[in-house]
Length: 257
Image (cartoon, rainbow, N blue to C red; front, side):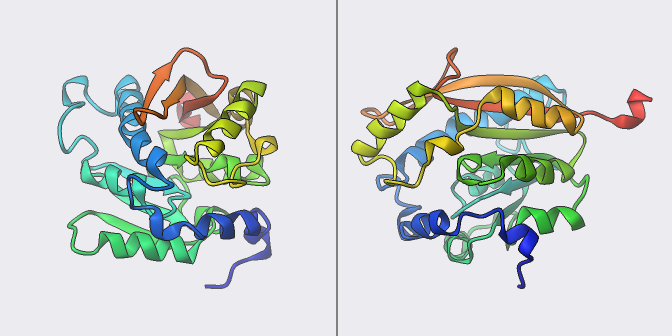
């Protein structure tokens, strides 16, 4: 597939190649991506909570094994599919999108033999959004924004894929002094690939909210996240200064008129 200059320009190729070097370890829950695996229950819970709060999922259905049944979900920057598969196991119709052919191949190989409704696509969001406007109930970018040079452009392209009244979900590190120290500590503990995260690319919740507001999105939920390495568990905390999860809902322009 030919990649346009427009889309390819918003990828840090060196960073992507660095992440690809650990591609074979993505599905080892005790390897370099251990924290990513342990984040899954909290990521799924956040999406379910958000969809319950916005009335997309009934409160009494939140613990059902098919809670995402009938929902079209786009996982942007899916990597090797750790979150993508988890979403599909709850019966979501899931597309995993990533520009890395190597990581997508790993995701497809891991999917073999499983009866999950997942399709992996190697494409940039800038190209994908042109053909898939207003298509998805849920669009997710989890642990992705901190790797993107032009985050505003990236967020705008993702918003195009969300249906009116649909939700955009993000998890990412905040840009604070505390998060800088935390990143260094986690790298020292070898729970994060060294040099894969650049603190200057971290983005604050208020910056994300402002960008999304310009695209007619209302931020409805922000939660702080905390990782306890010695027991390998993520949890929600009141403090947003290290890591956070954010949900924003696309407003229906027709209803606003």
